[in-house]
Length: 284
Image 1 (cartoon, rainbow, N blue to C red):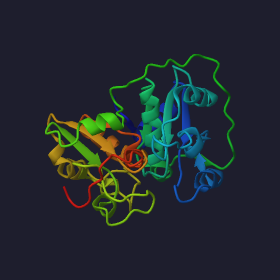
Image 2: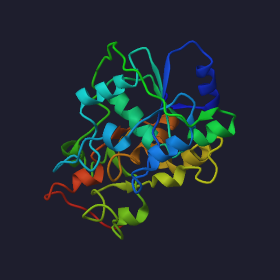
Image 3: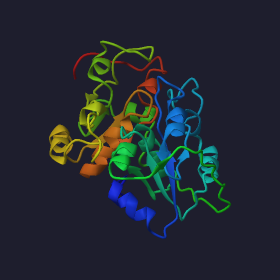
Image 4: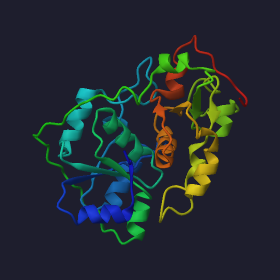
């Protein structure tokens, strides 16, 4: 199901009779107050703020990575606290980098809630196209309606599954981190440098319109098709990153291109939490 929504499609939704909720997912891993600071300064009219660190992740344990998916029961209550039920269209957005917004959509998808979209171009595209913003804090009213849960275990894989697919000729493991981190030349966050054995590197930043997101977060479809040309096949694709957030950018791009994939939320930080797991360096 389509995961991106354009600004024009958002405007159509806002002018319709449909029930919708807009969630601000801006964040910065290096600046813990960036999300709330940005929200207080300016946000899409009517949007509610989502706390990425607390709402979309459990506290790290021994395993599971640095940002484990929120446990289902708690996640459902968080989602309902924003007034969301089965009949709600959920729009998520960030600055256009798609990480926070994508993370929320995929968590919603993982519990069977598919009526959620990431705003292409984020608030940058929204403002450029005349969208109305505000600075006041919006307080949601909790939904008392049911929110159906239908766990989609086919789209998410764990460490054991990834381990069973190493060097499998029918599987492509996609590392979404920067090339120096993939190669093991640097590691600013995790305790071990390198990558999961057999993985190929597709840095998520390479496909974003970093300098101009007024029309789209992504570079052209032609660029994306060329960039991911080796993935247009029947092989299984598994996408990971450092902690399960930036991988969402590559996942959204693959979705846009119609390429099937699975995600490994625990990612590299989960992989290296098992001492017996091998880590490779250099190009593969």
